[in-house]
Length: 73
Image 1 (cartoon, helix red, strand yellow):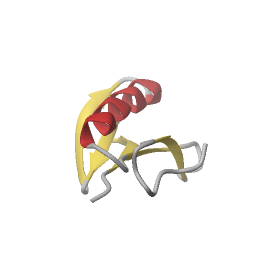
Image 2 (cartoon, rainbow, N blue to C red; image 1 turned 90 degrees about the vertical axis):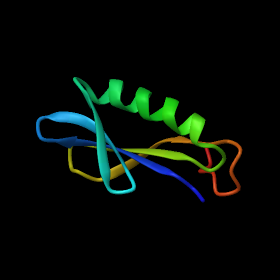
Image 3 (cartoon, rainbow, N blue to C red; image 1 turned 135 degrees about the vertical axis):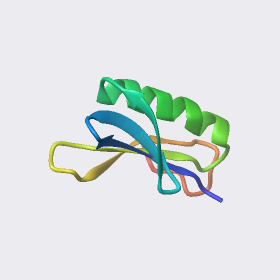
Image 4 (cartoon, rainbow, N blue to C red; image 1 turned 60 degrees about the horizontal axis):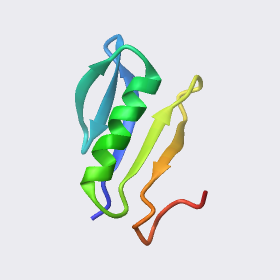
């Protein structure tokens, strides 16, 4: 199963949302993305990281290179 990590702004901090649950508290979007990438690498093949931008649309930030459904770079 592919795990997707979403970096979102929630209650005044950047957080990582996985399976509908928020975790962590980061001062910057970049810090949260880096933490999500670390978690995604440990999650296994097919893990992906997305983040919200200024217009609240998700952008792909990191695709696992091992998964069949990896995003093209």
